[in-house]
Image (cartoon, rainbow over all chains, first blue to last red; front, side, top):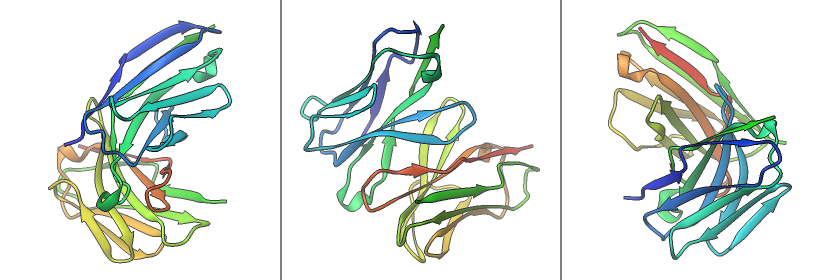
Length: 114
Length: 111
């Protein structure tokens, strides 16, 4: 059974700092991995999707990497801003007969203070 | 562009009452559809998924059920709610195993 762990559970940083969020998964046989952002009381916003054959994906100030063999992914946020404050979730898609089912980590709560 | 709707946004129901939550998707055809629940301290849990009309797969045993009467409509139901059914219910769609896009969610409180 796939298990996804996110470290740290919470992170508080000053504005402008570069930061790294970590995600690990137990079964390396994945199809893709997604990073999401969730604001309090809201749905999830997709940030980046990395296919199992890719090493990294970039979108603006966000960069996500994937090391499938070691079961790890990182989300790098450059020049953090107060608007980046949210819960960040990673989710693993096993693909195949799993029809796109995602297994989520518990999330990292990020606070960026001015 | 694609849009996903959920309603109601919030719901307060007594124990033992029925439930119907609706999710609709616009701007795509034959999407995979998903129901998730987010309970306090337990993370996101997949409840049901569907790859086509009338095709429903359940991930966890519970007193909830799902139906897909139309290509872009997904309904979550219960005949009798339990206290443990309280949570934040999220609907999502994807094209096969691609990026999943989530709706705004329904906050359900069972009293």
